[in-house]
Length: 122
Image 1 (cartoon, rainbow, N blue to C red):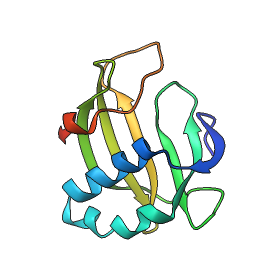
Image 2: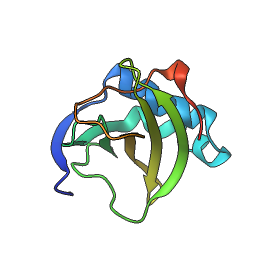
Image 3: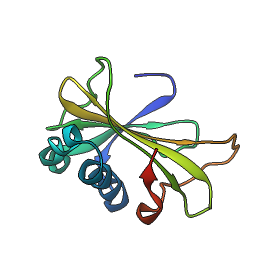
Image 4: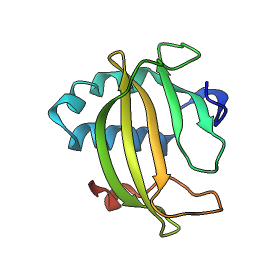
C-alpha cells in the first residue's frame, strides 16, 4: 500500500456503500456491470491526508488489486461542509478497488463524503 493509505479492516459504512452504489447506477454502462460486487466489498485501507478515500477488496482479501486503474465513474459533488469534491470509482483487474474522494481546491482540514443528491457528471 501507498504511504498515503493506512491499512483498515472493516465493513463499509452505510454512507460509503451508498456512495459506491450511486456512481455504479448512474455512471457508464461499464460501471453497471460491477454492481453485484458491492455486497462483497469491505474496506482494506483509508487515506491519511484527511480525505475520505478508501481502498476496498472483495471476498475477505486484505488488500485491493494493484494493477492499472480503470475509471468506472467520475463525478463532482459537495460535502456537508459545502466543499466541492471529485468522486472517482476505480476498478483493477475486473474488481472495484478504490473510492477516491478529493477536494477540488486546497484544504487543510478533514472532510466527509459528498451528499449523494449533490453528485453530477464531471
